[in-house]
Length: 372
Image 1 (cartoon, rainbow, N blue to C red):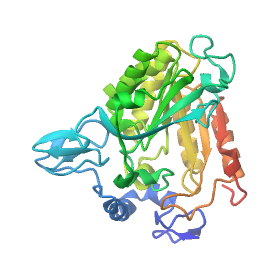
Image 2 (cartoon, rainbow, N blue to C red; image 1 turned 180 degrees about the vertical axis):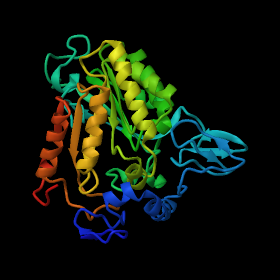
Image 3 (cartoon, rainbow, N blue to C red; image 1 turned 90 degrees about the vertical axis):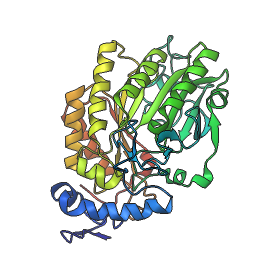
């Protein structure tokens, strides 16, 4: 049971790793964010990462994402993937054609946040974008995991990528070569693909050139990349029947900064842009943009869900929204798994705002530990 260090609230829905409840983070951010940032900084230093996005007076600016790091000579950006070497910004790998990445195949339909609306899971877009008029059994997805991230989520379920000792490095052609005759789609995720978006786009181009057939290209991302990069990803996803999956972690910027180490303002702005891009494209099926939200006990509360639902509905109520059950991980292991009541309430809120394409993912994790 955690204790909020500001209001004194004791609850299983307060994580001691955060130190504050959701209400205090939202309503008194000026009092609590500094303390949370200090604790996060200590943790990041263990992985050789800067505690906050650097803003060096005489540094080199990086414009790849919303963090807009200004990196000092010899230093690295918040994601750890870019450095200032001799006054020039460069990838730590020495080239944007090489990235810290792992990749593997998953049989379709796979455990993807969009599998319930995508061609691989449903046959949507058949015959142009799907091999079958239904689930693509017998085909597979190439999952490409980038070992960098421009956020720093305290509940990250893939946190091990922060350890550079586990990294392996591959060129564009090496990753693209993993596509075979039964590969129906590629999904770039992580970490997050944002810091190495150029690499993922090059992999997509190389794979499509070698396999000019049904080969959907998708990204799963926090959505905080620069607008130009997002447009490139959207175009590739549009042309191939893929999608861009936005992880809308929170609506409150204070909660995003507290739990994810970064502002979500560009994420929300980019999501709105992507939905409008999809609308203008005229492609309704399969959907080009999919939203997902992890139901973090105590933090993705009714206030957050109502704000997110209102935002998504304002953009386009037909946008698919996957609500994912939470499993405690990384430093927020003191929270329970998402409760059934929490999940049911989230569905009801979404429907109340007119969002009809909504579902719960990770049903096996649901518990009866608490009510919201």
